[in-house]
Image (cartoon, rainbow over all chains, first blue to last red):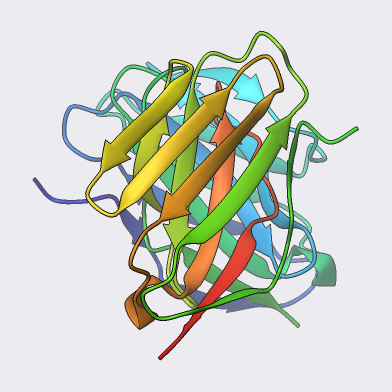
Length: 114
Length: 107
C-alpha cells in the first residue's frame, strides 16, 4: 500500500498570505489528523477529521482550518499567516479513528513564513 | 499538568547496551499507549503499541506498561547506532504527544 502523501513538501509564503496544504491518507484509512511541529513546542495537535467531519480539535486559533473530502483526502488551510506559523505540518492517517489504532504519518510540509 | 511527559534527554548509550525510555501520563482512563520513532528531518514512525499491563516484546523492542503508576516505558536491547533518533510517546487518542526523548547510540 502507498503511504500517506502530502503536498507540497516545501512552501515559502509571506506574512499575511494564506496557504492550503493537502494530505492523501493510506487507502482505506478514514481518519486524518493534522499536527504542527516546531523545535520549541514539539508535536502539537491541530484537528482530526473522520468521515468528512471534524471530530477533535486542538488549541489553535481559528486561522487554522481544515476539511475532509469523501475520498478521505484532507486539506488544511492557514489564513493571515504569521511568522510563528513557520513549522513542519504533518498529517497522519489511521484506520477507524484514533483510539486504539496506530497513526501513520506523511513526510510533512515544511512551511516558511517570511 | 501536561498530559504526557517524557525526559527530553539527551540519552546516550554505548552500542550493544539497553536503552530505557520512559513516559508518564496524567489521564487514568487512558487505554492505549504508543511509541513513535522520529529520525532527524523525518516524520514520526509508529514502532510499538501496548494496551495491557505488563510487557510486550517485538524484536529488540519491549514496551512496558504500568497503569497503576501511570507510566509506560520502551526498552531497546542491543542498541545500534541506527536507533539514534527521538522517541515520542502518545496515549489513548494519540493527539497529545510527549516532547520526545533524544537517544544517541555511541559506536
